[in-house]
Image 1 (cartoon, helix red, strand yellow):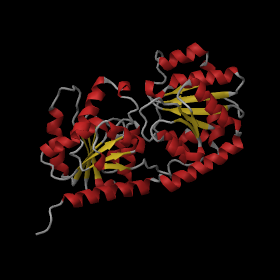
Image 2: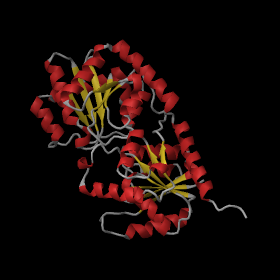
Image 3: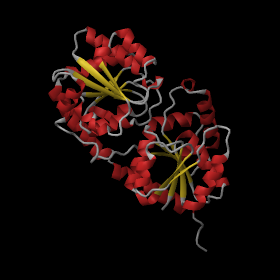
Image 4: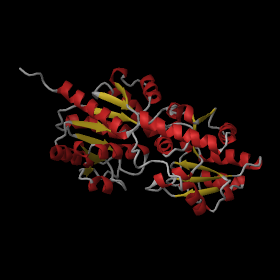
Length: 378
């Protein structure tokens, strides 16, 4: 069973990391077509013998990628094609016009709390997807929330399949010595509460509100520090930098670029915080931290609240006051209780979100759809 996965690129986003996980779990069953230049993950994927093709799309009006996609189909001869995210989904559907005869799948990784939050081009692509959604064999969502939201926007409901993210539990695991090592790197003491936020600098991620929430807690006497990791977070002039200056939080926040080894960060934290305002489906960072035995404070966006279940804390809203309240509730339990919750979080990942089990569900989905599409024997 050979599946060609069509995606915008292979940078270190959540969807890209999840695709990489699935490819590693079944390396003989997939290849990738990146519409743009592949990105930093392409080397690791190719190193496992997995083909990576590229359309080298730079100009949105360029059509050269279509010929590259046709060549990839001819070279790889897939049994099925799966698009990833909105642009990848539309490109995957185009393969039916380029000679591909097998089923096409869509993979939606985004929740849509309000279309007004999306860029004009994204709104157009979502509406186009709704109109075309009767054509793919299956539409995979990584959260039930996202499925309901997209169906309310007109996406075909009878093609829905909800498959959660899967996590490599050998890579992401508890490390008892990590807190001491990370605190030494950051120059903070053993009694300081250490929070972590992992995510690119974008308004949906809501970094500035977390800074404002921490400022409230620090003013009230809390001893805490937050390390923020992600693309663009360390820029000198963005809303996050301005919020840090405005609240006088330079001493309490460390900003770091994205890391290829987040598994070295999570186990050193007391809490992961996901303060997102919109857009999350199944946030990878929450599952990764939980796999490392770290409880999470999340907003009720996408399936974040259902993922943490009773092992974490849910803020009443993404606003600073409610984020501060949720963090206060969490640290108020004390470190021993949080370590216990971390153990429960790890067990929850083992029982619900192990990569091998999720990969098996994807392979079964592909096999069933390919079998349905095959012509009946005479």
